[in-house]
Amino acid sequence: MAPPNQLCLVLVIFLSVFSLSSLSTSAIIPKANVSLSIPSSQLVFLKALSTPEFIAAMDTTQLGTLSIKLGAANAKAMLNVYNEIIKKPGSPQALKTLNCCVEAYKYAILSFEMVSSELVEDPQTANYDVAVIGPEIANCEKELIKVKVQAPRLLAGNRFIKYYVSMGYEITSTLELENPNEY
Image 1 (cartoon, rainbow, N blue to C red):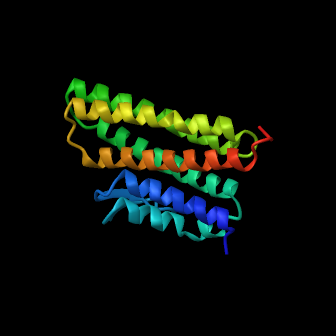
Image 2 (cartoon, helix red, strand yellow):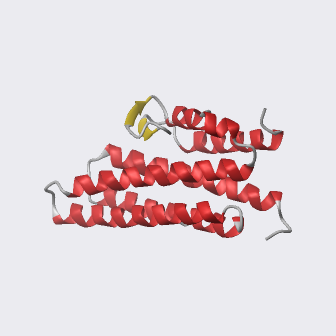
């Protein structure tokens, strides 16, 4: 059984995600690498947090590493979606917006990868690096809405990246609190 503080962290993460959205969406489930229709975003994260890898996580750092890797995998999948959509004919304004989102996702992938390497050595820097992903994705989302791009899948993907950012932020904050004198 997981230590009590780890269970509390998982509960805090789940409740944070639960409070962010209750809409139907699509998401990438760990080990599936395909888009699946899921009744609610909460179910996706409950499934993600109940995979054998998450259950076997022995500490907050392992939990953080798994979450960040899932965030990076989702960001890569969404980048592929954006790149596929760009290949289709569209207005110059929509193309500009989609390219903005491609750049945001490239940034998110690099940031998730940095966070993964920083978790053990410097959770404070990891906390900052995961937090700055959110505004990039929010800007992408704002631009999509502004030019009226009709793509619910893109908006849902943006929402899921925000969930992984929230999870990463909570975990890195917890790592800072668990070891306050080390950083």
